[in-house]
Length: 149
Image 1 (tube, helix red, strand yellow):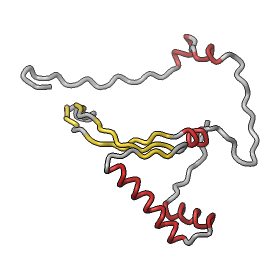
Image 2 (image 1 turned 90 degrees about the vertical axis):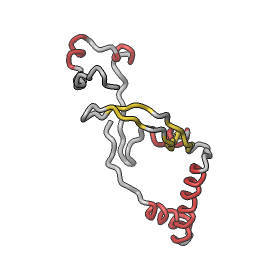
Image 3 (image 1 turned 180 degrees about the vertical axis):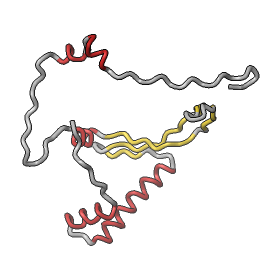
Image 4 (image 1 turned 30 degrees about the vertical axis):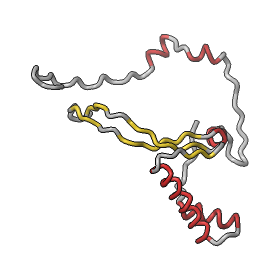
C-alpha cells in the first residue's frame, strides 16, 4: 500500500477554509480556532482529560523515572519522571482515516487471496531464509568490578 503524498496544513489555511465554508470573517474564525487550541492546552495543564466523542481523547499521563542507555556511548543515564500528552483516536476518526479508499475518479479492485490468510502467514523454509534479520546490537565494554553499572 502506497500512501499518497501529503501536504502540511497550517492553522491559517484551516481557518481560511472554515471561513470560506461558513461565510464568517477570517479573523473571527482564526480567533475562535486559537481560543479552542488554547483551551485544550489550559485543560491539559490543569490535569484534566478532554474527550471529544467520535474524535478522540486528550489526557496527560505521568511517565515513571527510568534508567536508559546512550546508544552511542553505551553510558547509563537516569531519565526523570515526566508528564506527557497522550491522544487516543476516536472511532469516527479511525474509521475515516484508516479506511482504504481509492482516489476520487479512479477505480481499483482488490483481488481475493488465492490461499487462506492463515496459510499465508506461515513462511516456508525457503521464504524464511529470505527474511532479513536484525543485526546484533554492539556489546557494551566490560565494566570495572567497583563500577555501579
